[in-house]
Image (cartoon, rainbow, N blue to C red; front, side):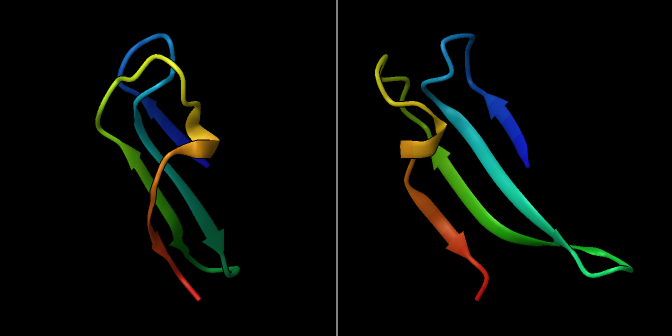
Length: 52
């Protein structure tokens, strides 16, 4: 998992999750919260991509 916080409070930014198949990594989830709203943490950010 990677987490790029937009600021120290962690209420905005980008969160990604990756899957490793033994040879390479592939993106399995991408979530982004562009607005720093001072209350939502990374687990509540809108998910924009899920690999099935």
